[in-house]
Every structure is written in structure tokens, then in C-alpha cells.
Length: 374
Ligand code: MG
Image (cartoon, rainbow, N blue to C red; front, side, top):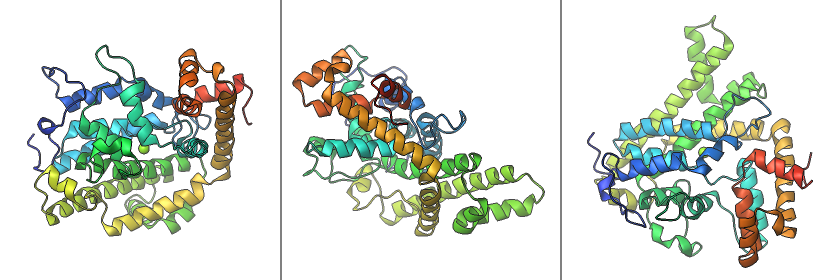
């Protein structure tokens, strides 16, 4: 399929750190996507929490199924905008690979500990280190040897970094915006988790349906429409139908508004996209407001719900307990990490070791070393 002139076409890639011969029937972005799927860190997403830990139900989202939903929506958006589908899919599949156990709360806690040593922990930078150093499965190079654009997208998919604060990221054109393929990931991520979290929360009976309708107009009007068509339908099915409609509305708005913005800035190349002062991929202001209300509702009623927050706090205390335990007993880590901790800053190695754990493994370790907070 012919791509739009502003697409990040694979033939224009800046390439890999370690040059490799071309593959006979897969281009470099397609190979990057496949390497990500075959990475250990990708498989671990299955045992990492999105919002609900596994104790709630086996059919709620975990970070792997969330990632697949992001990839699915991102492919639709990429096709509609005629941008590179392989690069988009690779970036969607890799976007959460750097998440430590217990989601954003885990990230915040590790960051707080690292700041005591004048360092930070950030899941995007951690993801970059995973694909550049920690994954070891190729004879010819360390890491996955991904193309520049995939590495750049890993760093920039959700935020910008200043070259003064992050000199180690200087090669990633920090004063420029990333290509559209990377820009859409952040918005699609938000569409995917806002709708999925609502779905799981409703299934878990943690939300008040009437309050949801009163406070989230985009859901209310979708539900009212569904209800008019099927007044006798089961409420759960009408809920599903309405939620699907919300997902569709947000996705369509992202596609159409991004298209409009591309036209208004007259983007004719990837460089035109890169040179914009702001990201081009975005909701319209009307839908951004609607989406913000949904987000606020989830923050106020789900993420801070005593059932969710109470469990999260206990797990984060356990994570912290394990951090302190390994700081005091570095030899209790596996040999490889214990050796690294002798020569490199111990906090860095402990942080990397914990960040790579699945939720399940972390809790087993906490049990073993008796630092679990129950
Ligand atoms: Mg995500």
C-alpha cells in the first residue's frame, strides 16, 4: 500500500546500531516488531498488573492484553492515516515493556528511592535499556539491535525529554517531535486504557452506573442511544455496546483531527512532522474535554477506590521492602546481579533487578525474604 508523504517509510530509516544484512521478505520495522514479540520482557507483561491484580479475575486486563488492545487500535489508526503499520505496531507492542511491577505506583516508588541517590527511574528510559542491554539472545550484538525509529519512539511515545537533563539521550533528536507512528501511541494508549478500565471496573462491580452516566457525558449519550434502539436488552450488553461506541468515537476523532492538523500545517514529509512545535496527533478540543471527564471519573472512583488503592499500597510497601532488603543484602540477588552490584552503584542494580520482575515473582521474593506487607 502506498503511504502518505508524512509517513516514516522504512526505506528512510536511520538504521541499526550494528548493521545487518536485509531479510528476504521482512523489512526492518517488521523485523523489529517480531524481535519485540520474541523478547523475554514482552512475555513478562503477562504477569504485570494493569489496574486489577490477578486475584480479581482471570479475564481482566493485564499489561499484555492491554498491549494487544493498544496494538489493535493503533493499526486501525495507522491504516486510516496511511502511515507505516509495521513501525506503529512495533511501537505499540513495546510501549509498556519498561513498566516495573504494579504499574505507575511501582514506577513512582522506584523513582522516589532512586532520587535519594540523585538518580531517577522512568519506564521509557528503562524500556530503552531493556532493548539495548538487558535482552541477550543474539550472537552478534547486545540487546535487540532495533532501528533508530523504534528506539526513538520508545523514548518519545509519551513525553519529551530535554537534552540538558538527559544528555545520554542526545542522539534521539530531542529538540524535534517524533514521527506520527510514535505520536499516535500515547493517544491510543489512553483510548485503550480508559475504555478497558471502565469495562473491568464495571465487571468488578466497583462503579456506580448512575454516577457514571451523570458524570461522563460521552458514555451517557452512547448509552442513551443504545438504550433507545434496544430498550429491552440486557444492561450489561447495552453497557458493552455503549463502551464500544465510545472507543470508536475517540478513535475516529483522533484520526480525523490528526488528518485536519496535518493539512493545516501542510505536512509533506516526516521532517515537516518533526519540525512542528507541538505533536500533530491529538484529539479535537471537544473530544479532549470529553476524554478528560472519563479520565477524571476513573481517577476519582476507580484508581482511588479503597479496594484497588488498599491493595496497591500494600504491594508498593512490599516492593519498597524488597528494595531495602537487597540494598542491605546484595548477595541475595542472583549471581549476575550480585556481581554487578560489587562494581556498579548498588541502588542502580537493585532498581534494575526489581523493575524487571513480574508482580508474581516480586511477591514470591517478598515472601522468601519475609518483607511482604499483608
Ligand atoms: Mg499502556
